[in-house]
Image (cartoon, rainbow, N blue to C red; front, top):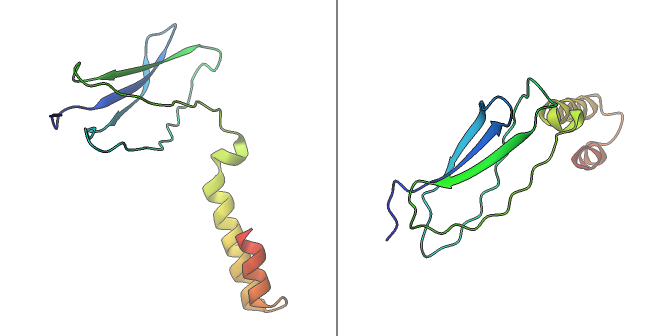
Length: 112
């Protein structure tokens, strides 16, 4: 039986400084059901040239965890995706209000 206090802990640590840049806790795990968690950890690196270590551990040594980890650098476009989506939404409502283009076509183009 897995305890409620069991979690997987993910830390991003600076290799040279030893400073912990980000920490996330996942869990508690379920012994019967495999779950999938999609998490975005955004770290503002003060020194982009410094190498970093991703440390993954559990609070309970009797638990076996399997995971897939993918680390990606966000492009400026991806980092501002909420702002871009808001601007598209404002443009869609603007074109619907002025009715130069039919509202159905505006909604279709805005959803792409």
